[in-house]
Length: 345
Image 1 (tube, helix red, strand yellow):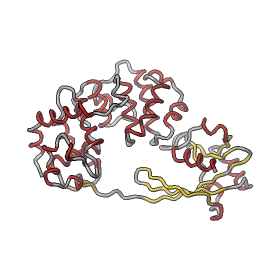
Image 2 (tube, rainbow, N blue to C red):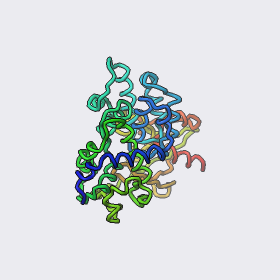
Image 3 (cartoon, rainbow, N blue to C red):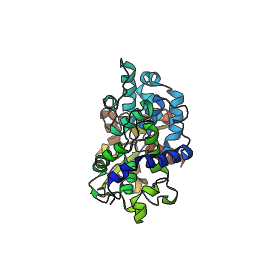
């Protein structure tokens, strides 16, 4: 393993190689075109746990509908959630909405990472990204991409309990590498390197601008780093009901205080009628992953039985939505796709 201090001592040469590559090879992204604080904030929220290619159409649609903090702060939550529909991790949208409201109400807009961390949905990474890009604060961003780069550069082969422990370990080195001038460019270059060259698997080492500084490249085993304990995956199974009656589809709305699905609609869980659906009524089985959960959802055809009528009467989260109005309600991304496919049958 290389001593991290050795990399820090070569900081000027490392920065020159990285920044020179970034100036030439950076992707053209809408938040980099005529950049603004608002664009940076929105993009950072959208990019949390989401790939750039997925974010692009959402970002464009969002900016056309809500072009600045004032417009976002004044928007109803239903509009905010509808614009976010399909991006997942919906607490990000609610936090972004609350942040805009706090921003508009603040007598003095925050500029430092510490001040930004007082706002909804802002953690160390997002605070560093926003303030380094928008205010030239020398705060290093450290996420999974940056951890991977630094682990390979230094050849650090310790086994980390999880990503959080790895981020904490590499943050001092990331701070030591960041320049005093244009720190936002440095952070974006690091993120770009992790996203387009230093892949988790099959990294493009032969075209990497900082390969000359990389211990893992020299040792020929870049894919082995960083070393993280495997996540424990929990399996969950959910039975869902597909009930269409008089041109309306039965949906269930997430509780207002639900952490993940507040206000969003999905097909109702079958347990609302107190018994398991019959195997012969199975329409389709779908699988999806959310954080550490692998979820199997089976969708069953259901008739409007007395038991189901009673469930609807006692549960105000259940509602009939006319088929022609499905585009107006906010559905979770997977359920939007599944409902569209089932209706196409």
